[in-house]
Length: 201
Image 1 (cartoon, one colour):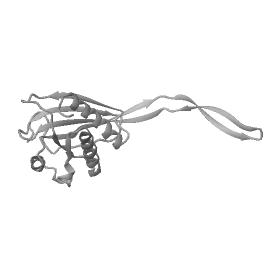
Image 2 (cartoon, helix red, strand yellow):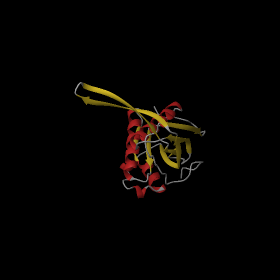
Image 3 (cartoon, one colour):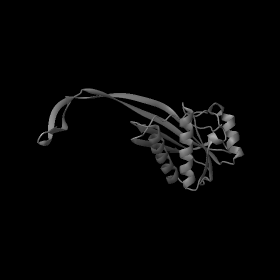
Image 4 (cartoon, helix red, strand yellow):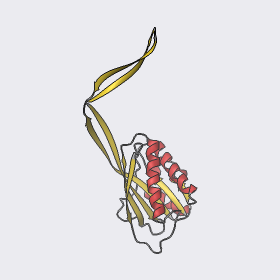
């Protein structure tokens, strides 16, 4: 099902946190005729069930706000363990979705960066009999090690009827901080490209 260069089901969605940047690289496949999609089933399968619901709900909500009917898969397949190939296909057909949008992680890169020593100044207000006095105390901070996490994801848009991929994107979320912000940054980047390519409004 949903053949092409995108790996088979189940898909996995694992967004660790806020993407300072989400950089999509797009690949489009020729289909005939190409048309704007009116109804899409949105699917993700994270490590944590809550993250699945949050992602699918937000992404679907953004599509719906753009007048594209979108349904998060958790509404038709409540339990994540049941996100099988056959169940996703059946749900898409039953709800008359023209396509399935699936997102999964392809890698999580962790990098440690050494921050060298830095001269800093601590400013304090001290109460004295004559009033408040500002003091400045220089100090040396570091060296410190800062850990960064970059998340690499793939998103595929599959035509329900033919089960073929019609669009895909590889994305990187850089230096994430929170799940909520990562979902928003990722969704914004992918939806913008889908609109540019004419698949959604």
